[in-house]
Image 1 (tube, rainbow, N blue to C red):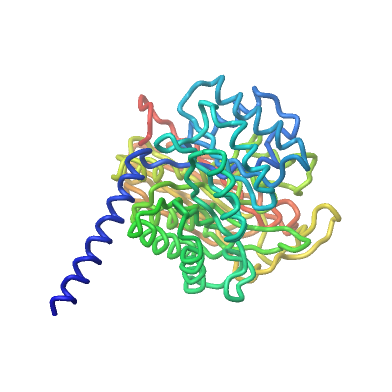
Image 2: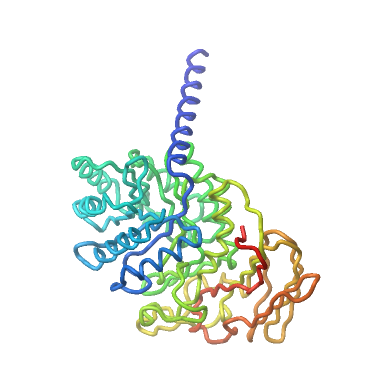
Length: 461
C-alpha cells in the first residue's frame, strides 16, 4: 500500500511539474496568433519589394496576427527563397512593430542549410525568440532528421526550441494529417510521433484537409495532451480546403465560417499556447486568408491557380475569436457585423480540377458539399436579415450576440437587406450570382461582408 501511495504521489508531482512547465512556456511569450506563410508564393510574386512585404505584414497585423511562420521548402536549390525571407525580415525591421517571423524549415532542406538559415537571421530583431532561444517550427521530416538537426545546432551552440509539425509514415499511415481518417487515427499518430521524438519542445498540429469537426476534436485532445506534458501547443485553424490536381483534387465542407469557428473554440477551450492560421497564402489548397485585391478580383500570378475568390473575411470574422483567445474571455461586441460565405455555383457543377491544363471535373468529396449560403453574425441587438436569391426569399430574425445561420442557395442573383426596429441599416447585391458554370468559383468559397454603419464606435471588440 505504501509503495502504491508513493507511486501515486510521484505521478501527481510529475503531472504538476508538466503543467507548471507548460504555463511557464505560455507566460514567457503569451498567447500569440501566427499565420502560415508560404515563402514559395508571396502575394506580389518572387520579385516582391520590401514595401510590398510591408503591405502583407500590415494587413496581417491589423487583423490580430502577431507574426508569420515562414515555410521554407527549399533554399540554395531555389535562391528566390533567400530573397523572399531576407526582404521579409527587412520589411519587419523597417516597420519596427511587434510583428515577428518564425522560421519553419522543411525537411526537404539539409540540416546544414537549416543551420545556415538560423545563423543568418539569428540577430534579426523580428526573429521570434522564447527566453533568448530561437523558435523553430520545423515542417515534416522524421526522427533521424530531427536528431541530426539537434546535433548540428548544438555543435554551433545555437539555443532553440522546436515546435514541430511532423509528417512521416507512422504504423502504415502514409501521411500524418492528410486524408479522411477520423479523429482516432489522428490522435494515435500524434501519440506515436511524440513518443518517438521526446526532445521536441512543442508540437504544431496542422489543422487542414479534413472535416471541421474532426479538426476541432483533434485540436482539443492534442492541445490538452501537450499542456499536460508541459510542451508548447501550437494549434492550426483553417478556413476551408479545396485542393487541385494532379494529386490533390479534394474538397471538404466547412459550412462557411462555422467550421473555422468550431476550430477556434477548440483552441480557446483547450487553452492552447499559440494558434496558427493555416494558411496566409496557400493559393493552391484554398486555405488562404490573405487579401490579394478587390472583392471581385480573381486573378493572381497570371491565373496559375485558376480563378480565386476573396477569403480575407474568414480572417475578419476570426477577429472576435482571436481577441477571445488572447485575452482569455469573450470580448464585448461593440458594433454590428454580418459576414456571408457561398460558392457561386451548385455542388454538381463542373469546375477546373487542373487549371494548368484546363482539365474539367469535380474534386473528390463534392457529393458531401451542401448548397447553401452561410452567415456569421456579430450583433449588438436583434436584427432582421432579408435574403433574396433568384426567385426565392427568406427572412431571418437574428438575436444579439454571436450566431451562424444558413439558407438554401439557388441559381441567380443574391441580394441582402438588414434592418432593426428603426428601419433599414444596409442593403447589398452580392458580388457573384449563382451560376451553372463551376469554373467561376471552382468549388471555392467567396467570403464577403455587409457594410453596416458603425456610428461613432472605433473598434468592434
